[in-house]
Image (cartoon, rainbow, N blue to C red; front, side, top):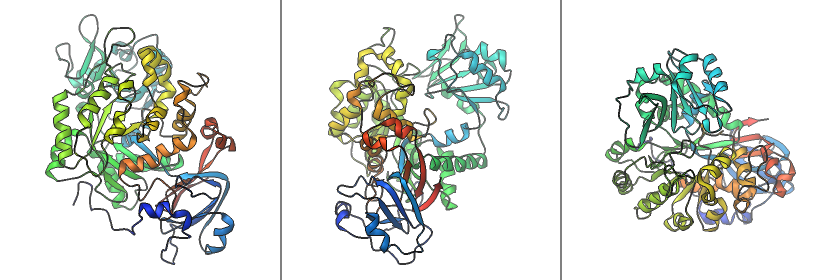
Length: 552
């Protein structure tokens, strides 16, 4: 028994040779009776991402792809009882995997105060005043004070709400709380700052109501938690929303409560997302004791790498930089001491566990590369999450060490002006998608939901256009880093399959692969490299394991 349950079931082998020779193979040999997980789809074009394999039709049977090619050649061979889907207005891609999610947090947070588009503090306060109450607390997510004229502080919250208030920032690296929340957590002027965190204080030395990085953890034990039943219901509903957005898999970074929800869904045969689960580093002793190894699990739920933090974020000004921010005041902060991080990474890797390491600032990225480059290999690659600002001297190093770089292009939609203001010319090394690909780096895309939307259309648009949703700047922010549509899709599909160690099962639409696919209804201008065409499109058909989950 592994950390996530039984070992992977034995399946018919599909070798790399099978994938590469797919254009010369007519069909995958499977049983003759088509179950509900079978279908035949006609499309405008099939973007298979498999070398040499093209077409406008795809046939799947028993949850796996049986044939891809020209409709005229395939249709006569498909039994009449197999369901037909005529989407000749659509482009078909492999199912999108979101390579970095906090899925259960997002699922629960959908029913809390939403502050992501609050452009002023007054607007945020108005929503808090009217917000829902959860077990005696008002809780919310998404505020971003970088453009506000007034700072987030407890006095303003006290004036609109006497109940305890806890509000996560957009990047989830800061919390805005009121006096009642501080009192509930026992945080006073005498409470020391934890290592890697800061209790922001007012002119009198009292907590201001703003907590940064590890100081947020002082609040966590005092927050009301959803019951297992409530969490399960929220995750179930969020799974349906993921399918609507064309997402068929996630790499999730959360704790035991989220894992329990996914395992319950799998037990009920209701889990229809491919989940690679990254537990927090606090679970490392238990994982080692249980002899758990990365990559173990089932077709639906696998163990990923152990998640640990090296720094904070750009939005909270806690990303750790080699040189001070542009105003010259500080360099952000390391969140984990070097020796502590080294010991955890070494222990994990020697036990067969991959390391999943958060690093945003160029100093944190360099430390991650320094510590990870010599680690023993696990069954799945070690990876660095975000890799947001990188020194030119370090651009080659991830590829050389075989480290996957997990990035979130949708962050560009809000980070461009902030990065220019805080990092200046160093922004040339921020979100350096093309430069990394040209060096052979495996770049895997995700959202970091709830920090950004789960909707991959925004991520693809950001990667292709490098412009905000209002179209600025033209012709794109460091436009030489723009990706093609195929490169962006590959980062969500093939690269995430590589990161999960399942390139023989997912990531391409080739014969023998799992039938995880999406038919995208989008203007044909997309084929000419227009990222806005994809942004304005929609997922018209989402198929997971051969089952149709969404049919518009």
